[in-house]
Amino acid sequence: MPLVAAVAAVSGDNTVVAAVTGKKIRVTRFELSASAAANVKWRTGSTDITGLFYLTTTSPVARSSATVDANDFLFETVAGAALVLNSSTAGPVGGFVNYTQET
Image 1 (cartoon, helix red, strand yellow):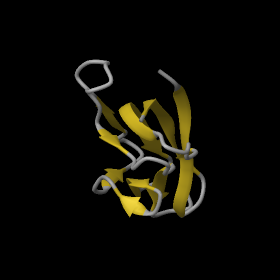
Image 2 (cartoon, helix red, strand yellow):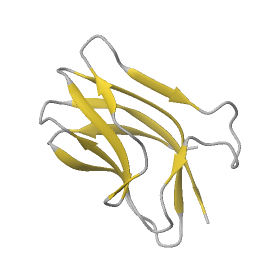
Image 3 (cartoon, one colour):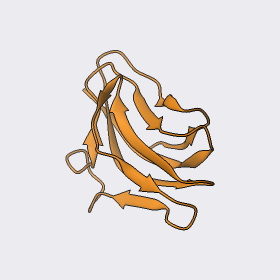
Image 4 (cartoon, helix red, strand yellow):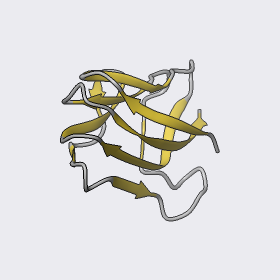
């Protein structure tokens, strides 16, 4: 299961995992923190797939699915769309994402 850095260096959309034709990106685990207050959400391309996560310098966000198999995941993109982290601030947001790619 790939592990990639999740970085939002600019306000707005930041691609975390590039789109792959015909594949869904299924997120099984992620953790995010920020150096200043920020509101972030995950998107499939330009469509929201989560609500907002409210980050502060003392409150990182971590989520994980219960088990690790292809049918247990937190959320997924539509096939052929990138996994995007949208941030309300230009201040750095960072962390990691575990994901699989499924047809």
